[in-house]
Length: 321
Image (cartoon, rainbow, N blue to C red; front, side, top):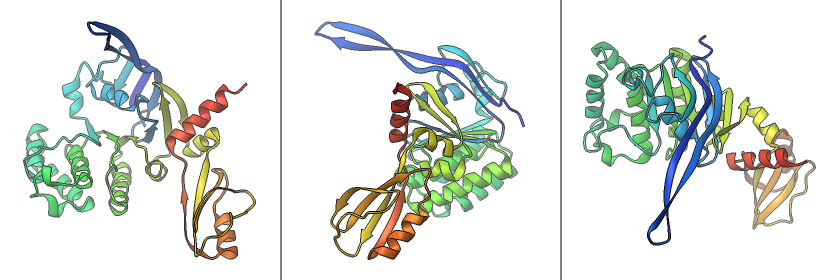
């Protein structure tokens, strides 16, 4: 395994931003989007790259693809400097930006794929094999003759993922790949990505606000905030470091006083629905069993803490004397 397939060392990205001050005067301000970022990703790894909005995730990916040039530091992907050899690197990477499509808006999905077949000079047999596999696993068969502009966001996302993989990229950058997908489609995409990583050894860098994506796909997670790497390790360690809380949402048959259980606290009550908070390091199973045995239960679910709350708690703990 190539231990430094993706390598960043003290990488910075600074933008000059001008804003109007008064009627005629403009003020220039320097914004540091990425600040001394250092990490390595081995070939074949699937890594979650998470953080709140404006943390620097998309800026990092744009530097890794060569769209942006770093303001400082050292950056290599597969032994190549992305900003200096962007064209050659493009044949080795695939990119999916959740809110932007790489498909042709007015063409049927099938024609977009044919254009990419020519652009990347994919051998005919390999193109057909890859396309058939993506169509089957991502359930795209009924969409191939539909113009891209008529696709829903979830359908387009699946189409974009297939487009990014037609040329057998060695590394795949995914920015919010399950945005707009329903539960069934999310499950299909996650299964597809797991199979891709296992069978092809494709390196995957995944940015998302959905922690379930990370839990089901990634053994390693990196947290970035204000352009700096705050955490690099297992997701379980992130929970412990952030000391977050999970939430048990309980729907009862009727309105009752707040539920009292050891190891949990009721944080909200609305009619027959109650929200109970408990530590992320604690199993939900005993709480679920106790609620089911002691209360007239209709339904329940467990919600994971969102990324923003985990990061806020990490900051709070680190700043405490």
